[in-house]
Structures are given as C-alpha cells and as structure tokens.
Image (cartoon, rainbow, N blue to C red; front, side, top):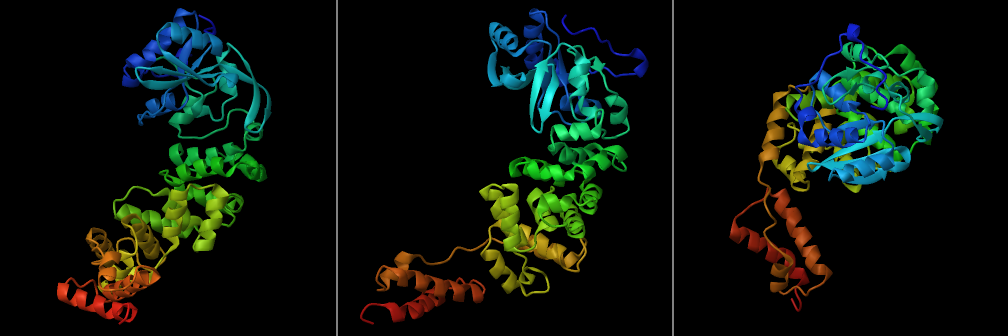
Length: 427
C-alpha cells in the first residue's frame, strides 16, 4: 500500500493495541476497509493512540491516511459511509461510520507556516507527517491491527511522562503560538516533574506571540489547563515566567487557586474551570468583566465568573444562619456554591474546617422558599397596576427575608396589607 515503506522498529519494544475496543469497533474498521480498498494506508493517530497507551479514556478518533481528500471522499461514499468536507483544503474529511464521526486527514508536510494558517502539501511519507506535529507524544500512530508506529521517539517520552516539542521548539511555536499554552496544558495533563527545559525556554522567549491569538483560542486552552491534574505547578511556572500577565492581564494569584483546589477536593467536587479562573485572575466585578472580554467567554461563563467574585462574609459560618440564608436566597445554587467556595478560599479557614463544611452543606440542601405573594395579590388589595405594585412587592420581600422567611399566613397577609396601604387608591 502507498506510504507503507516505514516499519516499526522491533528493538524499540513498541506495544500492540490489537485488543482495544475502540480499534475493533465496526465504525473505525469500516473506514480502514474503505481506504484500503483504494490501495491506501490508514492509521489512527495522536490523542487516541497516546491515551490508549496510557490506559486513559478515549474520546475522538483521528485517522491519518495516504489518500488525498477527494479520494477519501470518493472511497468512503462508495463504501456507503457519509463524508463531509469539513477541512478538505487542509486535507481533512469527516467520515461518519456507525454514527460515529472520524476525522480522516491526508498526510501533510508544511510548505510555509504563518501562525495558525499554514500552507501544506500532501505527502505519502509518514515521518514527514509526524515532523509537522507539535509534541512527540502526539505523533504516535497505530494501524488497524494494533501495531504502534513511532517516527519521532514519542513512546519513550510518553513512558517518561515528558512533554517535548518535535524538532526545534522555537520553530514549532512560531508555526502557531497557541502551542505555548498547549505545552503547559499537556504538561499539566500528562507530564511528571519539571517542564522540558528547552521547550520551556522557547515558550518564555516567544511569549509575546500570544498577543496575536484570538481570545477564543486562548480561552479553550486555559479552561482545559485549569482542570488538569497537574495544574498548580504548571500555573506557577506560567505566572513566574511572565506569561500569566500576557494571558490574564495580571500576574495571577496561585495561592488562591491552590486554596480553591484544596476546597474542591475536600468537598469531593469536580474541578470547576471558571471558579479556578476567578481564583487565579480576578477578584472584583470589573476585573471579572475585563477578563471575560479578554478571553471571549460565553454569556454563561461570564455570569459564572461574576458569581465567583461576589464573595460575602455573610455566607460563612461566623455569620448567623439567617444572614447566610438571606444571601443564599438571592443566588442560584450554582452561583451560591461558587461564591461560597471563593469566600472560603479567601478567608483564613483551611479546606478541612468543619464549620465551613457544615454551612456549605446546610445552605446547599436548604429548600429555598418562594415569595408568598405576586403582583396580582397586591392589585387585589387595591393598589393600581403600575410601578407601585413592584415597590410594594420589593418592600414586602425585604421584610420577609430579614424576618427569616416566616410562613404564618395571617402574619404574611397582615404585613402585605400594611406595606400596600399607602399605595391603595383612595386610601
């Protein structure tokens, strides 16, 4: 078959993934069948091979092939599969097989690179394709029989949990400055020990290139980095190297991030990227909004970031429960929990503090009562429809909250009538 001149080095001790469920699935085998019928080679590549070798969950499956995009499209359609030209100009066809999408990309080599937009030429040489990728551990291939191919020494780096650029790190970074953030994300996700020295030096030297990136691309990497298992030492490097100021507009508070992470673990909560972003990079509403603009956060993410910075000592266990309930009442459960954890993180209390744990669970499980009356109830008392109805409701609600949410029907009606009396027509 085309492009099969390279063979795995038996001396390298490369494993075989023949028994993997994802590799034996009907979907991927049908794609292999379609391409091989045309005389082309195809291999799974990148994250799926890396994660399979590490025994970690498999998500998307990418396939590299010696077939050019028009041939891929023709062959998969002839096999009864659906092909979508999602990135045909750069060699990628999305193939739907057994209801699963597979990105099938022609082997490529860079002719000219300028940031994210590269001019590529198709090739049938697997090593050329490997050398244009970012990190060695992402340049591992696997054929349909499970044989692993390692053109650039990625398997040894994978075993050592070492994140290393392929070739010259500066050259790789200048091809796409997002690779600086990817270097840190992969280190936090897969790396053990210190960052690769040559790669780190290149990231620091080229850090100003980050200003050329769109906020959306930076956002994607940062939010994934913040929930990685090794985030804290990596973010510490980012902050100390000056990269944090370029990304966040401020140096970054690693201690606050660390405290939030400790509290999340103590509460047995999954890592919250937006909460961690707030801990690291903003402490006021103005800072939260500026950061949301900088990273092009969605409206939902912006709201979550704003909630996280609304710390309030009244939420904590030193405040009386009625005050805490009053704060909780005005927040959704999600917003309350973010504000509470941030308030806790910025207090002197440790992550194991029992009082903070008790108050958190007490307010999280509290059944928030509904306001007893609506506008129609105010109108029924004789207040004309209009802005005064809202005024009466707000005054009543303020009293009701301050009184710790009483539920005595007679008391509630009496107070509503008292508040409404000055606004009743012809009173």
